[in-house]
Length: 128
Image (tube, rainbow, N blue to C red; front, side, top):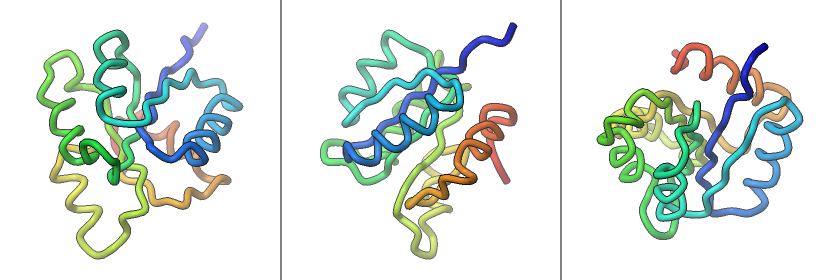
């Protein structure tokens, strides 16, 4: 029997969180949500998710900084962090990877491909 995978989604926009939560839950994932970096770090003190979806533009601490903080913690180092962001200008993807993200998904998400992308990240830890 396969265990349910837990995904932490760090996103300050409620509409985005709602859409992603519904897509993930409909595909059998357990979803934890954080509206900012502080909430995310509090959740990560109590839980070790299988994957973290990271918004880059947040009000308190940006996703780059939060990713570096997560990756600096020994118990979280192996958890894949995937940027889920509207930052799609030249160099943005490279910047997220340099910050420690293991992958990158552009917003708005493609609802037909999204859960396949998530499954691939969970299986491989990163996507080329």
